[in-house]
Image (tube, rainbow, N blue to C red):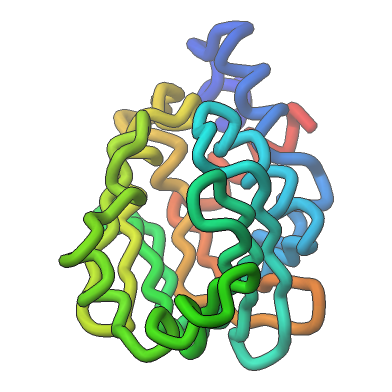
Length: 210
């Protein structure tokens, strides 16, 4: 029996399907090269599904620009359209940490010009002290820590609840097989700079399913 077959000899049909739903051959090839390209459309498709249970947010769309710049256009039930421009300063995913830090460079309430003037001049930290932090009220346990205009999203609880985390191989979860060490952007595309943390046997075993 080959090492790859042996490694997956106790994988159930459900776990095999999770692997297939998570990765495809192209993504796995990108992982082996250390850079995974994520198109803006994929980011927005994921965001749409994640916000289904949040009636306060009517619509949200992310635009990705070069130099780690992103723009978020959020249509809210109470405040109308909120536009945030920011810079991704850190993104990491590994066994110990799963977080992203964004510096908010500009913010406005597009439908309320007078209120927007005050809104744009207050730090995100002060706004959350005055009005609370709605980003912490979610079903996934994701927490957002804000310091001035720096916003750090801790999505470790979401990762721990993910289907891939339930797939155990050689005593480790497959969610820990891939590290995201940093992120970069181009127009319309995020690039995850990755390292495969599980060795060639597991890599080849995953590839055999795809």
